[in-house]
Image (cartoon, rainbow over all chains, first blue to last red; front, side):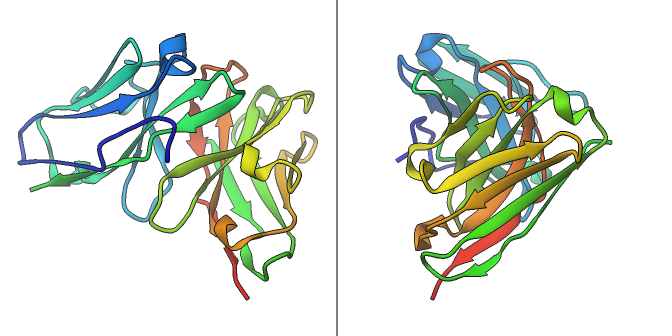
Amino acid sequence: QSVLTQPPSVSGAPGQRVTISCTGSSSNIGAGYDVHWYQQLPGTAPKLLIYSNSNRPSGVPDRFSGSKSGTSASLAITGLQAEDEADYYCQSYDSSLSWVFGGGTKLAVL
Amino acid sequence: EVQLVESGGGLVKPGGSLRLSCAASGFTFSYYSMNWVRQAPGKGLEWVSSISSSSSSIYYADSMKGRFTISRDNAKNSLYLQMNSLRAEDTAVYYCARKLSNWNDPFDYWGQGTLVTVSS
């Protein structure tokens, strides 16, 4: 049972927009800690996709965006492409002195 | 180019020990907090342990406390994880990941991981 809750899977057709939610609590996201998102392509290590709620590292397309409100955060992907098929994880800090992840969401591009 | 290269994984019997290493290059290692994150087969990411840049602050996930020990050698640009009393549920790919010092900072670079299999 992950501290942050994500839907197990989402899907969309090429060109469409999908969103992935990440729900936490008052001890992590709701406490004001930032949310970060990682993309894990099949068979590879996770890669930082969005940091500090809504910022993209250099090289990440602007098709990816993030937002945060209250105890939740969201990752949006517009103009879906086949190469976006991957697992996506949210992550934050928890007041229990630990770093926490969501359970991950598998994105299928139909 | 930032590089993190893990090594030391392998097959170990329940109750056994293993020491993982992570060799860092392409950045000033002593400026960064370093971390271990693991991923059981087919499962999600789980934070394991964190060590501050000077080793003055060390944190563990509850299920690892008392069994795992994180350490670093800034002169050798290396991170370590000593794992004792290993259990089947510790089977996972172990990644080392870099992070700046603030609680809020992300894990911005990851190694390729090393597989630890605990089985008799």
